[in-house]
Length: 585
Ligand SMILES: Nc1ncnc2c1ncn2[C@@H]1O[C@H](COP(=O)(O)OP(=O)(O)OP(=O)(O)O)[C@@H](O)[C@H]1O
Image 1 (cartoon, rainbow, N blue to C red):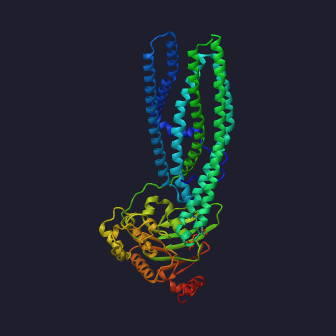
Image 2 (image 1 turned 45 degrees about the vertical axis):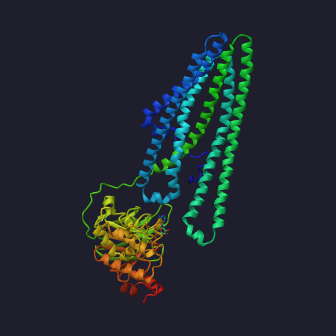
Image 3 (image 1 turned 90 degrees about the horizontal axis):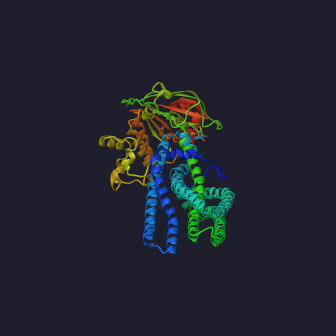
């Protein structure tokens, strides 16, 4: 479990205010009150035990029968325990419900975030917020808050009953309470700090492990297993040391509290004994007082533990809130259109950078793509080609200029309708774990068998399907590792085509395709371009020499537009690109 924490959250770490925690509890307040009352009732039954014990001792003294009282005491213990257990069950069940709500809310928000925000957050970090931090919240709610409620009432009950039983002994106990309180108050920030650091160390370990697992093949191929084991091992060692630090402060708090209570017992024993000797107190009352002292020690321990947990929980809550508070995408009201006619697009003097502190990526980009046909974007790495797609899909918003699709400003399109009119094939077209069929129908669940067969044929995947042991039902494995690069790309194209796009955005992969796969890709693109608009980012000019128009980008602007033949004659950069790729200039 990755518990990665952003920088600067260690000491003592940003925490959500307590009222945010109560916001999670509010919808469940009725059941929480019921559970709380049962806990109080259970504590009440427990608190009756010393009183009954006092009667029994007195009854022994006066020779009265004690059988009834003993049975009463046993019943009180059993009933009290049962009520407390039931109350605890209700509370924990509600705690699970609260965590479920929190997780649903978080997941819901996560899929509605802006791409820009998700790009900024690390995937491992987002994952740990949904799994790790919500789990921590549950521990806080059950072990922290809920148990503390019962403990609090038991403590109050014990204090009141002790005060009523004997004022002098109570004052002695009070003195110890003040000492314990002071000690805990001094140690608490240290425990808290140590715990934050321990959580951070575990998070760091998750991060280095995540990094190595992401590149598992590279790790193996590079023969650096031992080094990676050592790196993760070092992180584990740091987590161990931090954990030990928590144990040190925890034990110190535990032992000093324990000693304070021992002193309290001895003091109550000595002073109580003297008071019994002087006749100010009865032996039975002293015994009852001792029992109350036990009922005081237990809840204090629980409350201290609860306070530490709540502190940690508020840090987790803060991390959850950071995601929940991010703005959701404005999707607009989708009108939905039955049209599958090809659409054109224009970029007019578009300026864009990924952030205020980032360099300009588009510096006045202008070009036009009429409906239908094949348009290619070419240019050196970093020219801003993929960014054209990111802006069209509105993953990011351009700062200046106008982008239109089908003659309409993309900002006036309902977002869902805009995206529904595109088929989008990313550069490293991902194949998700699952069957080939699931992958193809990922974006078009309602497609018919005919449509599926046609898309498979158009993307030249029929060979693959007939070769696979279970055909379309073959599991293609995590990240599509069972497919070749070319096949993965064509699966992604088929997936995009099944949406019947009006404009296909194809970011061609940089990985080298063999001659057969390259030819197939060319055929597929040409065939699709006969029916719809295709805008392809070409890293290999060979796939687009037959394009209707080629847009040459460089340094965030468009430097030339034309056909292959025109550009070879007119544009130096294009000629150079063509020459380096062994095409005849
Ligand atoms: N999500 C992002 N956040 C910040 N900067 C980015 C992001 N995506 C791209 N960039 C930067 O924008 C610039 C243009 O990137 P873009 O991917 O559009 O180039 P490209 O022409 O497609 O390059 P390539 O051919 O190598 O894929 C690069 O300098 C890149 O580092």
